[in-house]
Image 1 (cartoon, rainbow, N blue to C red):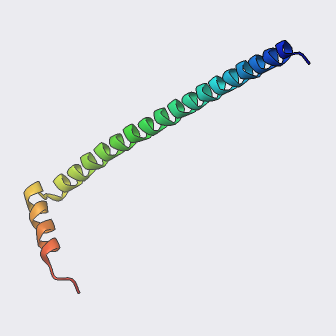
Image 2: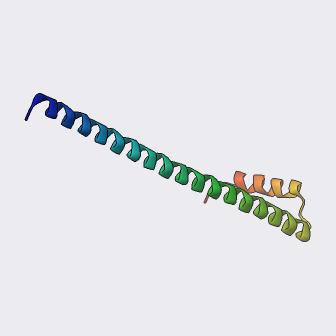
Image 3: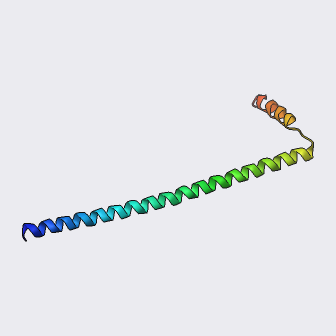
Length: 84
């Protein structure tokens, strides 16, 4: 094998490795973006559920005739009770 052939083989191997690494990085970037999008979507869904829950609790309190101030006072009283 001549030095010229060995040099060509090394260049070809380097090019193949470069293409492989670039493809791998591209795949990783795409996967990371997909995961990021999924996480953001789930966080948004949780925020919506929390908003709905707060609204429902407010409606229930209103139906029961409990004001927010009364609820805060009762919560404060419960938190200050000694533990058994």
